[in-house]
Length: 349
Image 1 (cartoon, one colour):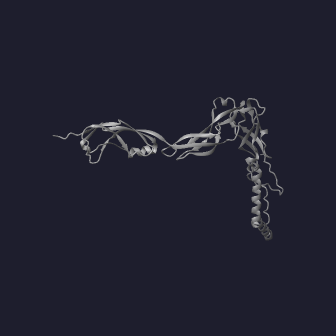
Image 2 (cartoon, rainbow, N blue to C red; image 1 turned 60 degrees about the vertical axis):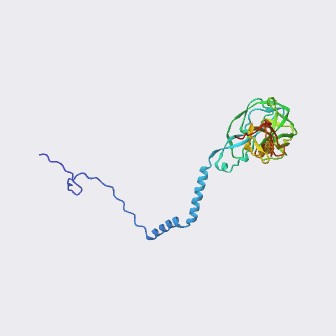
């Protein structure tokens, strides 16, 4: 019988059978603890780094953050401003198209520079139309004098339409304008300017319907007397004055004259010792027409008395004249009828 061979170990013995085991690498020994002196130095360094010169460290941090924000926030930005437009016109022509008084300009530049920007730095855009033909005129960046560090990113509107007409002259009347009302009982009779005409300039087409130039409004509110004042002319759009815009205006204010008809005014009987009940009047009413100053006529309506006169000795019927009394001075009158039938009342039998 064949025997199984065994491996003989170095000591001449066969090793015992064992299961397969995982061989672990050798562990490193932990570092030796720091001496107490080194620990104290580390603590002091950490304490100094965190707590010494706190104010200086905080200031340094603020400065660092500020520099960071400025560097990162100073990128190019845009703002939009309004810029006025100035026109240079030809001498023998009139611009008849609508003018653009200002345009919107978009500026680009560093934010810090834009924050210091003042619109007055740009000035106004000058548009020279002396040799421009009828049509579109463009607004270009070279018309705008931008300050250093800024550039023009856009203009709106980009252009304008221009049309011209021949320049002409014309002599027109001056038309004074009044506003308000005089005091009750008074009226404006006449408004006259000195001079009465003026020469104007403008587009020939505009002259086809132009007949006068108005003045500024002159108030007559509450006036009771005439007066003279100086005022300015107000020409319409596109019309220029060839001389001064100052004129003298005389306003005539006077009492208002009226004629008032008063129908059905009753007639009374007047006389010493007369009993009105013993007489009859036919007709018993008349129509009165008063003429004169308004205030006086209004007063007359309240104060006048309409009557016929009868003497105590009268017994028979007759024609009697209608008499009007109590009228203020300057008030005229008409009556209809002028005479009425006056008859005694027959006593009962």
